[in-house]
Amino acid sequence: MRLTILLPLGVSLLLGCATTEPLATYFMLTGSGATSKPAQPPRPAAAVRVYVRRGEVPAYLNRTNLASMHGDQIRYSPTGLWALPLDQTISLSIASNLNRLGISAAGFQPVFSVPAHTYDVVVHITHFEGHESGDVLLSGDWRVLGSGGGEVAGKSVTIRRAGWTVGNDAQLVASLSAAITELSDQIARALR
Image (cartoon, rainbow, N blue to C red; front, side, top):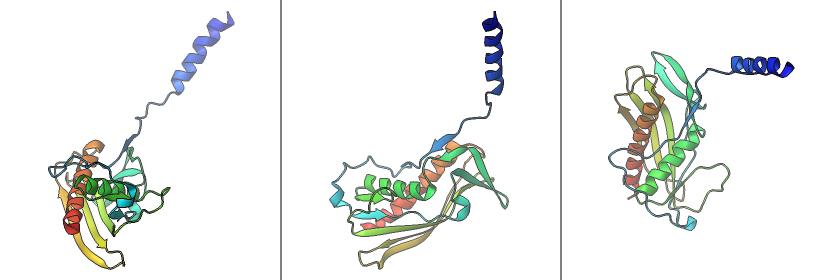
């Protein structure tokens, strides 16, 4: 008798306490865009030509939430999150894109030591977000450094993509990925 009373009561309490908030979605930057090619076969670790250092991002981007600008205010997605810290995912994405373009590269990973390499790529990001206008913006600069630390190439960049629907996190990440692919293409041209 007690079981027939306590069981429905217990189930009701559990269901009443269940959350109705949407679950988080975790994102990584991926190779995309018309210039993407299939990845080249992996090379031995000793053959790494380029090391992409940890990306430099402003403080407002140094968090897990995807960011967008609404006027002069920053809006952080409550459910769209980066799977890795943004400075790390930018580095890994550029390295992946360079590998896809036939340039042996490794990106920053905190648990691994830096492999022997010929060139360093330094990326400084000043903007990496969507805007209420529907534009997605990547701006900053990149530099390729030789083995002695001297600058071999570099460029300031502003890459703007139109057509983002505000609040669509997957679409925002796809546009940011396409912008990183374009940035990677610029770096690859400088390394050839």
